[in-house]
Amino acid sequence: MRYTLLISAVLATLSLAACERATVVTPPPASVVVPGPAGPAGPTGATGDQGNQGNQGSQGSQGDQGTTGKSGTGTTVIVTPPASAPGN
Image (cartoon, rainbow, N blue to C red):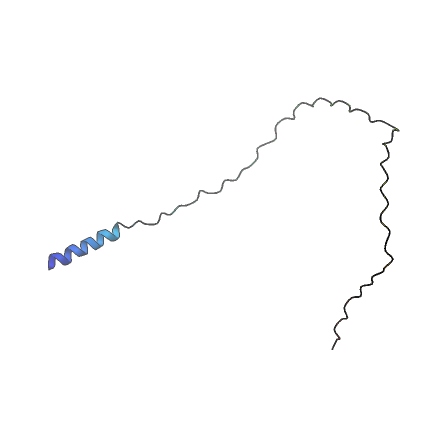
């Protein structure tokens, strides 16, 4: 009986010690980027070419005229809004 109690206590201790512990991960400290001194200025670039001149004085062609719509039937419909509720 004594050995059984002793063996079960040792097994309980070993089984609890075998549990995985949570791994603590510490993030690295934030690095701060500091710009260095400015370098010497580079050479001036080449000048670009002049663009083409557009046509002056010419006007585009006029569009076609639209068709005439249908004439009405002569009936006028008047829609009135619903009456509002009386205020208290």
